[in-house]
Every structure is written in C-alpha cells, then in structure tokens.
Length: 125
Image (cartoon, rainbow, N blue to C red; front, side, top):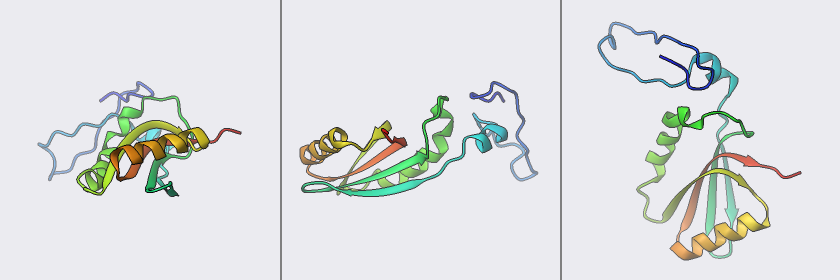
C-alpha cells in the first residue's frame, strides 16, 4: 500500500487468522508515529447549552487528514445517535470570542448541546 502522507510504499503484517481478509490502511507506521494523536476533551459552558469539544491533535499539521478516518469514525460511532446532542465536525477551531458566539448560536438554533469534533484547536497568540 502507499502512504498518503509520505508517498512511500508499506506492507501490512498478516497472521494466519487474517490472511484472507482485506485491510485498507492509508498511513504507514512511520507517519503514524510522526503525527501522533492526542485526544483532548474540553467542556465549554454556553448561554443555555454546553459544547463538548473533542480534538484529535495538539497542533495543526499540513497533511492529508483523511488518513485518520478510523480514529474519527470511532468518535462518531460513540456520539452520533444521541438525541440530546448535535454533532458537528470542523477542521480547526480557535477558541476566541467569535467562535464561542458561533457555537452558542448553533446550539440555540438546534436547541441541543453540541459535540464538536475538530482536528486541532488553534491558539491565536
């Protein structure tokens, strides 16, 4: 298979139990270690509701982020069917006043608590 980040070819190790199963991987082990996932959970109180923010990385990377589809699909499976929450997926989020007002407006629009899944939270400094 070909890694979508470094474009190098890599091979998957198979055992006797999964010899005939097809497995798709889009990232090699080297890139997986180079761009580690640090799940971070933050709960922010809005005017009437709450926003739970789940970020995958601790900083912004300029890579093809679709190679981490397994990680964020597991997050979506846990939260997608909950009736009291509205799930939103964003690339990046900066926790300044403008973004917090936007999250507050979205929560009031749906009249639900929010779960925001982002790749990374950007700090403007």
